[in-house]
Amino acid sequence: MAVWFEASVKYMKTNEEGRTAKVSEGYMVDALSFTEAEARIVEEMAALISGEYYLNTLKKSNITEIVYSDDENDDRWYRAKVCTIDADEVSGKEKSTPVHFLIAAHSIDGALANLKKELQTYSVDWEICSIADTKIMDVFRYKPQVESEQEI
Image (cartoon, rainbow, N blue to C red; front, top):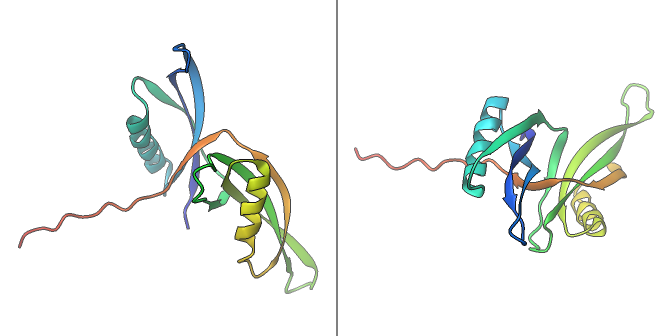
């Protein structure tokens, strides 16, 4: 299971009018530790940003599920809290457990539709407790490095 870290990166960005402004953008990266998360976000930013930048914040996120989309128009990220409803084995009472999602979509309605599609695979009852827009710009999944074949 991936552990997701949320990073905030500050840098100077040139807008459409040619003006530069300092911006802060959010990114998600999966890693095993803060050290690995920092190294990975620095590596990813070096490929995206020309010029100076710095990692403003890095924190462990409560996101446990990412819902990706194949639609190229789904360019925003939405955060959702879904409560799974299950019966407590000891007391027999219903208990609600929160699960936090990050969903790719073009609008909040699209995020709701993508989330409901994902939740159809769940075998327990669920309820969507909240859904909101985020400032996340991109999500960087772990990509295993391919080892080169060594000659014998």
